[in-house]
Length: 368
Image (cartoon, rainbow, N blue to C red):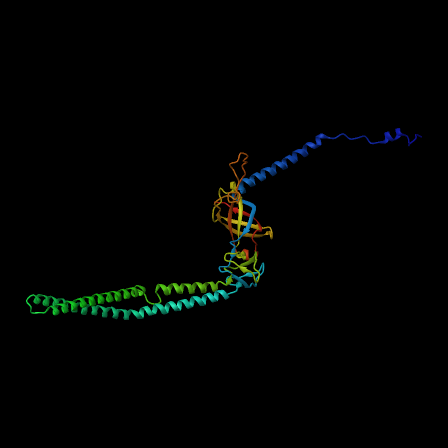
């Protein structure tokens, strides 16, 4: 009986190794190659048939025409019953400023208007008096002229008779003195008449062609009242649109300045999408074409339907604060992207609200 523990016995009982059958692998490679070829043909056919019907990008983001809230008057903040993310309606009070200075300015402007109205009213009342004075002065000139004419005639008559001795020299001298006095009186009357006419003309220039309320001085004073009233109204800052309060920096007690940014109102109900398509995708894109969109926040199960509202006037890089310097020697061509504005369906937007900056995917149907 042979020894089963011997090495030779062990080697004899071991199974011989099977050679690899290379012929069996051939059909497998052919099947795999066929599957790849069919997949490639299918993808090519899909690209050829469907690829020309639409263009899409995931480089798209929600945007909105945000309203920036800035004060038009300078004053301390009295009331600020707002907070970040608060929804507001157009006309809602956002901030109330202290109106003490504005009320004092309005009272002063109203006093100036009253003073101007009274002053211009006296011009109209004085016009009749000045006219009467001018008429009286004209009558005095006529009387003085007649007196002077008589004095001249009397003097000339006496002067002619003085040569024959019919009139004494004293009478001639008295006639000349009377003539000189009449001449002086005439000159005085003319000066007074000219002054009366000039005074009335000045008064008439202030009131000519308009009534008291339309007088330029009254109008200027009334404009100051309206401006003061407007400044008072502006101490109450209201929301110009419906939206969500964002970037709020208002604190009670701080003194705000004209033009200072207090907050922003984001109208999410009228949000739109800016989709940045490659320039090579825009050949068939036109305004009005339908767009299907999905938002990352809701996933692919929620579809938005919009329309192309317009294409930007330049690429994103050309509109950047620091544009690309394509004139440099180490320039490398990069495919540019052009922002395309897409309007959204308001009903869908109301059902599934979006926020500015959210990521979107947009697919434009470019079938003509």
